[in-house]
Picture 1 (spheres, rainbow, N blue to C red):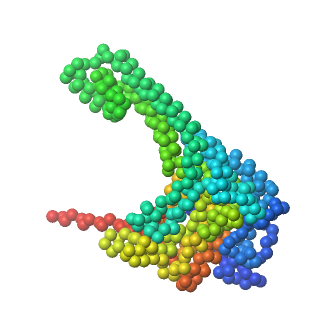
Picture 2 (picture 1 turned 180 degrees about the vertical axis):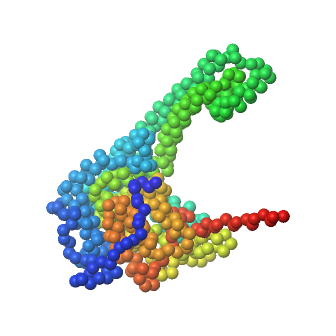
Picture 3 (picture 1 turned 30 degrees about the vertical axis):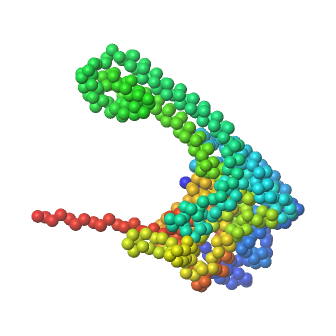
Length: 506
């Protein structure tokens, strides 16, 4: 499951839009000056308008994007929006599907929120933030979003020429920053204290299991047999009580308790004993799981995932940051903090259509596996797909998400890659897919997740990709089905099992 509910899109049923007086076109969207909207714009705070749709013409602004633009203005440029951003921190929650109620991470989510917001000043110093009229919105709305979970200079996972090649593991490495270590300092005291508590409970539970074994032996010791007779009786008893046999096979895990009980249990075994043992063992397992969660949480990857997931929860609750996800940003502009462009410094520009979609893949005739084609034998660069030679990763549209890896547990960025993989799973059985199908599936899923009009997401994607597609209209364009994850590209279609010939009658 993804970090947030992303519905599977229905087949596109978009109708031709009207342009001008009564004229209909199946290509051009409707344009008109901003009028009434379900997001009427309140009086703005002094300062520039933050709703800059980079790929759209402001003089001929699409009607399908008006609500999204007015929503951004309302939530980011007004006094009320500024206050709502502050208040939203109380409502921020970890995703309940990945962090269910009662889990250790849910119990600590307020501590995690305090930790990431405590680091805000650390992040501002790191990016050398100086407030000015253009970037004032960051000060008002980016609480908890000033530090990337993975490092200062995060390499976009699908922006490397060797994706899906043996060299990919090296090119996907990131330069680590102090932010993750600072986050660890904020939480390790409480997490470490909980770990010690759990270890104490583990010792108590283990003692309870030991006492159970001793008490049982004392109570039934007089029924024990000696020598060969006892061993034979034990084997017969265990065949009569399979549940206990399974329990005794696990007892050796608990510091020799199997030997402790073995001298008597075979002769006087009961299923009640096995059930009692199972209850105690489940208690032990639950405590062990909590200890493992603490250790995982303080590991490098665990810290990164928790920090990213906390930031994703904060951004999802923040009306301004959620609204700004509807406005796509060129990847190269996502970090222009001084000009107030792009994303919060701790967010990542996520390519809705991964860069790998515009790389060329070919199938090995022997293995039937697909692999990216290199420019030359010694080169690490991958050939672009025909018709997409003008594609530039830095110019392509991205959405401001939280997280720095493509792992499904790494905030909204990882969740978006996970969902993209799910949406394109069947399409990956072929080396090509229509651009419009990939566009519609992904725009619908991510747009609905954040309350955006999917048609506005499509408008922004088309505005960029039609400029760089060299072979006619986008309606006939094809791309490589790829999730942006390593090994997320085309794969051999499953083969039907060959039916065996019926046996001859004689």
